[in-house]
Length: 152
Image (cartoon, one colour):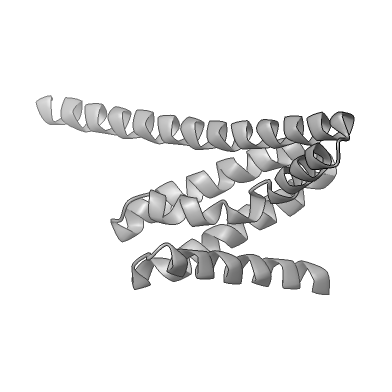
């Protein structure tokens, strides 16, 4: 239990600090840090049931959804929440390993880690796009229903 708490606290601190580095407004710092917590908890809970690549996708869906909600609650751009919120799942280790194996001439491992990095990055982007599309569709449907109700 203690390693879990340390990991969650570390993700909060990392994302909070990342938000400061990105010059986020003060009132966005704690919600952004909590976005990192949402991201990491989703990743940790999903990882035992699937591959780490798919766990990144589901975690990206979680943090993108959280970010969309926080953007509406705080009336701020969604990017203030999801850019730092994705820090816990950025494929830094696989990028490092792919570069390391490229430099050391181990092409098999280089291509393995490069492929994993590209898959993770693609699924993170897909999570963002999918969530954004769903929120836009929901907003449009809500607006149309509201407009339709006024006509009647």
